[in-house]
Image 1: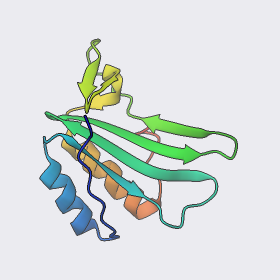
Image 2: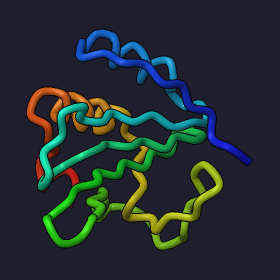
Image 3: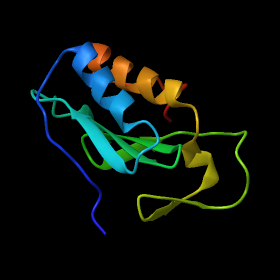
Length: 119
């Protein structure tokens, strides 16, 4: 099963926020990629969404490897959670959409997401 995905090009927060709000609790994915990305550092922020469960992934190149940073939700349960046909550890999933918006806003503004949010 494919994950619904639509490509748009924008650097305006209002456009990105509107797209995120329309996703809400729907099934789908979104990503925000740096167009003129550096050789080393963050490259792309991805979101997977299903039934009010959200997974955020930040892909970054450290010069030797490509790494993925994700949420570290210490208040989560112990059971794996399926989001967009992938099974995630419960610490990688959140139900707080404000965290999703915060991550996208940080990435748009700075080209990175704080390690406090994604580590």
